[in-house]
Image 1 (cartoon, rainbow, N blue to C red):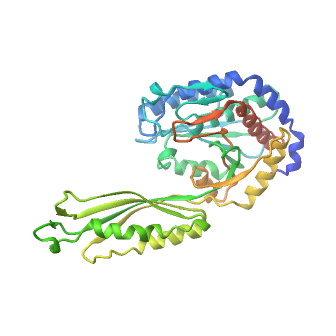
Image 2: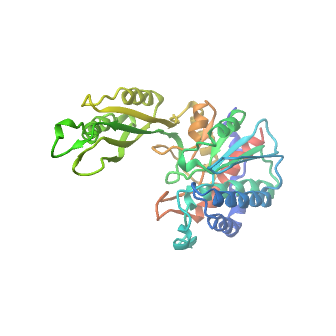
Image 3: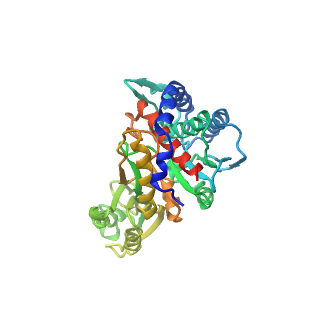
Length: 392
């Protein structure tokens, strides 16, 4: 059950904020140490080292969990699930991935720094600051003697590549959760109540090779057939419905004097609703080659379902806005094109609130940064939300 917004009045969010502002230096120190552990999605050794540090740090800040589970991610990052006791009926699930898009060695040329109130470094916004804020929010409740709800922290190391290993564990962890909180970055301060579903496809074309000068008519160009389909693919986009189709890469052929016998392209599809996702899936399955001698094969599928704004999202926003008003913050909400692990939770029909992480900009870019002054504010907001659930 989602608490009534009126219950926010019983939580002294300014007191939480004031205490967290006093701890800002330690919060930034924690963030610096976390960023200094490089955790690329494709480097299992670094992911293991980063997760080991995270578990030690969580013990320092929150104490020992009541239950600990670590699941082998295979060639992907492992998943760590820690259950902490508290008051309330069911756990709040904290979702935070620890992998980043940045390759090993990036830190050497781009170290963690704080200049002009901005902290920067690989992964600082997406999403290392979000976890630091979430943990410090819980730490603030402990420090001020306030109850905290049962919390389940799930850390996964494969989100940036689609959560192939962790998805079933995320879904399992969310099934009995009272609420799932995703500590991905905000969108210019706004929370994310809608996210597009993401599909990743590869379209293969197999034609007939031939000498381009001697016997061109004997060949059937895979490149030609596939290239003719690109406008058809892009025409499937419907911006008004929030649907985009993008052919991002195109490869084919062997030499300039050979009619291409093989080609493929990679297609990114995004849909804001399940209905649009189904339309796209049918259209992609129905593709036919303009040259009957060229055969098509479609691989891939939907990596994440759409996170449509649900009725529960409105009630959660009303509660969170009531908490934010105590800090004179007018909290907005948006639907964004990127996906997160929150998409999986929403598809189960479970309550989820996303974008509770850092305020900043530049995810996946060299200007990635977080606003240091906003860290205490967002930590206080998440702490206030937890306190409402702990108070029943």
